[in-house]
Structures are given as C-alpha cells and as structure tokens.
Amino acid sequence: MGEAKQVKLYGFSLSPYCTLVHLALKLKGVAYEYVEEDLTNKSATLLQLNPVHQKVPVLVVDGKPVAESRVILEYIDETWAEPSFLPSDPYSRARVRFWVDFFYQRMVPPSYAIIRSQGEELEKATKEFIEVLRILEKGIMEDFPRKKGPFIHGSSPGLLDIIVGAGNPGTKAIEEVADVKLFTEEMTPQLYSYVHAFLSLDLVKNTVVPYDQVLEAIKERRMMALSSSKE
Amino acid sequence: MDPPSSLKLLGSWADSHTHRVQLALKLKGLEFEYQEEDAINPSPALLLHNPVYKKVPVLLHSDRPVVESVVILQYIDETWADNPIMPADPFERAVARFWCHFAEDKLAPAVGAVFSSSGEGQKTAVDQVHDNLKLLERELRDGAFKGKRFFGGDKIGLLDIVLGCGSYWLAVFEEVMEVKLVDPGTFPVFHAWLKDFEEQNEVKETIPAIDKLLEYARGIRQMMLSLSNGTSTTAPAAAGTTSAINVAVDGRSG
Image 1: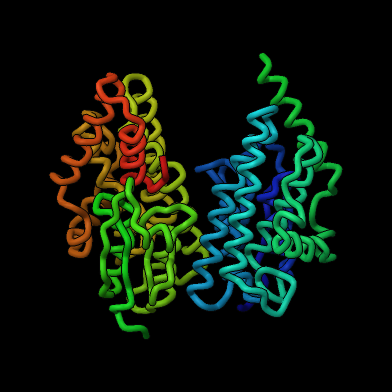
Image 2: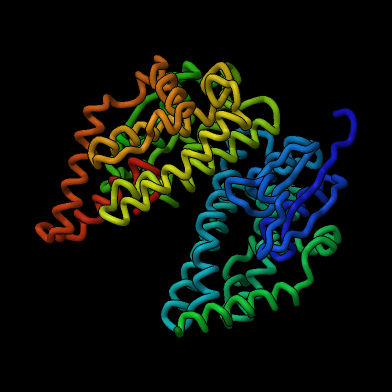
C-alpha cells in the first residue's frame, strides 16, 4: 500500500452515522484526526467538502473527501484490507448490501416517528420498528447462518455488525424516553446476541459516545417534538 | 463460470431500475431469460424471491435472488470480470456510489414529483429538479467527472447506467407536463452526456421507444387527473396509479 495516508474525519459526536465511521476506522487500525462540527454553525470547510448535502460525516483521505456513511464504510473497507467488513463471495456481498440498504431505508422513519409521537401514532410506529427488526433477524438468519464467531460477519465484525451495533445505543435511549420496548432478546434473539457481542468489544466501548449523552439528546428531541406538535 | 442460461430477470418494461439491469447484462455480453411483471399483480416468483419489497427488478442467478438495482449492478460486476462497470480505484468507486445515492434519494423523487403534481407544487418540483441538475452539472464541468466523456470515463459505467436509465423520463415529462427540465443552455454538459449515452447501441436496445414511454406517461397522467376530478375514485385504481408512477421513475413503492 505504501505510505500511511492522511486521514481526517468531520463529524458530530451524537450522530450514529458518524459513530459508524469512527468504529470502522478503529477496527481497521487507521490513525486519523477528528474534527467536531457544530451542526447549527457548520464550518466553511465542511460546506466545501460536502457541497451537495452539507452534512457529516465526511472522511477526507489525502485531501480527497468521501461523503455518505454507507459509501464511506465501503471505501474504508476497500482502502484498508484487514480485517475485512464484507464476505468474499459476490452473492453474500449482495445480501449484506441488501440488508444495509434495508436498515437505512426502513429503520430510520419509525424511529423518528416514535421520538415525536404519542398514543396511537406511537403505538403504530413502535409496531413498525419491531416488525422491521423481525424482518432483519429472519433475513440475517437465512442469509448468514451462524459460522465460526459471535458476529454476523463471523469471527470479526463486518458491515452489518457495525451498522446495527452503532444504532443500538440510540434505540435504547428511545426505549427509555418514549417508554416502549423495541429491542429485546425475546423478540430478536439472534440480533440481540450479535449486538451484545459487538458492544462488548473494548474497542467499541471506547469509541461510542457515553450513554447518558445519547439519552439526554433523545430526551431533548422528544421534548421539542411534543411541545411543537401542541402549537 | 456458470452457463448464461442460469440468469433470469424479473422486470417491468417501463421500469428504469429494470432497464439498469438489462443494460448492465448487455454490456457484459450476458444472455438472460426475461419475465415481465405487473407491479399491481406480482407473480408468485416475485413474491418468493423478493418477499421484503415485492418489487422488480430481481435477478435470479442459478435460482438465487439478487435484489435492489445498484446491488444487482455491483453483483454482476463482481461475478463477471470482463468489461468492468465499476472503477478500479476505491476513491472513484466511492464517488460513483455517492452519486448513485444522489440519483435515488434526490433526483429521482424530484422528477417523480414533477409528474404527480400541479400548480404551485409542480413549480416547486421543477425548481428542485433544476437544483439537483445544477449540482450534477457542476460535478461534470468542474469536479470529479471533468473532461470525461461518460461518468465511467471512456466507457459507460455504474453511474452512467444508474443516471441514464431514468433520465429519459425528463424528456417524456417535459412533453407530457409541458415544463422545461433540461435546458441545453443551462445544463450543457449534462445534456451532451445524456445525448451521447442514449446513442450507445446497448442503450438503444434497452430503453423503450420514446413514443411508448410518452403513451405510458400520458395514460397515467389521464388516470391521475380523472381521479382528482372525482370521476374515478376506486382505491385500487389510485394505488395502481401511484404504484405505476413510482415504479417507473424511481422504484419506490407508493
């Protein structure tokens, strides 16, 4: 590969999309510089690096910016080979990509809906979230039967482990704040065990934002959403 | 290598995501069986092989399903190495993937909104299409694709396929909706790329004739107008209309 690359990550500590990138870089053992962005006052640099969406995360490698967390993850996997995040055979890779896309598409809307709703709407969003997890559990079990390790990917974490794992603290906070049950061992035992294995890694524990910060952020979002809906 | 007859594509003739897969298979010189699907009435095979979304396209390779057009394109590229669709360099691959997401998440919904709206709503939708095209034009003119004939370089690649199969709706909607979407004066590089893309033999063999697309779009527009006028209010018709538009333009379910 040659000389070490200059790697810089622009992010926001409470964004799970940014946490994903931290985790990916750390798992690959990549040294990088981190810049925390104030999302209410984005830096000129960020706007220049991601003019299309003006969002974090943006990963800059030797001066070249990569945006969109999913794109960044695959880029990291292709640039630093070990440990690999994707299976080697094309069909399994296609199934991983399918579930990554599914997670991004189907997980976010109900989680946002749960945060901002009450009563019937809350119940509906909760059911939807649980159903999405159930579909994911079933799909992962069918596509990736348990191999030689505690992770979806196998003996080391892969793309799906990172993505599902990184989202979990947020899910836990939503459960607490909205007083709902979303992710339990009873409902999705396989996912539960995979996520537990991932979050137990020292590297992951040292990377993810302290839970109380996540909880505070979700509390605030719900409070704002519920008060604005009353106006 | 598996024999070509092990490939089967479940698709819909007016669906841009289906065209993406057909074009990719053609560029790779791969033979495949094709099964036409009706979006409102999915076949047992479609329900079996894509239970999560129940939509086309689905590529069956030795009876194993690959789903989601951009995932399918990468699968095809990784399975058959000749005539690569993806760039070799990881950064260029990231750029291609980024703009694929842009096409799916920003451009396609904006184009679809032009078709399904009217009045002020339509003006907003047209403005959004222009905003999105401006971003693409800038990238073509000054950014990652500067000086290239196609997004993939000298040859058509992933991003050409993803953007190209769907951009023909721009011309169709311009005519049916009587709006200007791609003014060559405002988007000269994009316009030139699109014309070049559409002239490629494999593309001409894949994309349906414009008069068929016009007829299709006019038919749906008629249905939509009669629904909003209250002359036809059956729920299946409404669902079918929304479904048909969304499937054709951006693959999302209504």
